[in-house]
Length: 199
Image (cartoon, rainbow, N blue to C red; front, side, top):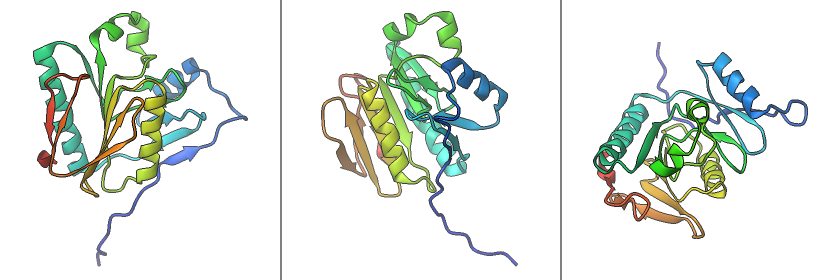
């Protein structure tokens, strides 16, 4: 006998570490290498966040977003595009992994080879976070604020459940745009346009 399941919000597993255990950046990197099968982030407070895997629909949507961003970048050659497997060591604290990210080429090239190989010590210029069907909204909004505090120039929190996007910019209030709409990369990603109906 099978039971019908309904989507419920899944809160990631959050491990409180401080003040009992304080991991250095190198220790956190090594910890992640030892646990490669887990998606692990670290908040600005030092909490470890174990992220659940996403389902097929969310994974497909994420792939579409990265593809669109990468196609634009291949034409402009203005920066580097990163997938959700990349963890960034944010300047104001925290080690975060956006669903899609872009870093201006000049900022990427000043990093050492070792910094590029490990968790890059910078905040992306642009990020996309895609809310999956089971993601709670508040932790994603807190994550977006961490990016902003570390220098994010433009960020999109795409929320298919509510049919809206929260747009984050430096020094401005969060703007909410309803579906369907097209999003502009503005002066951060000149000429990049994302058509939301693909989601």
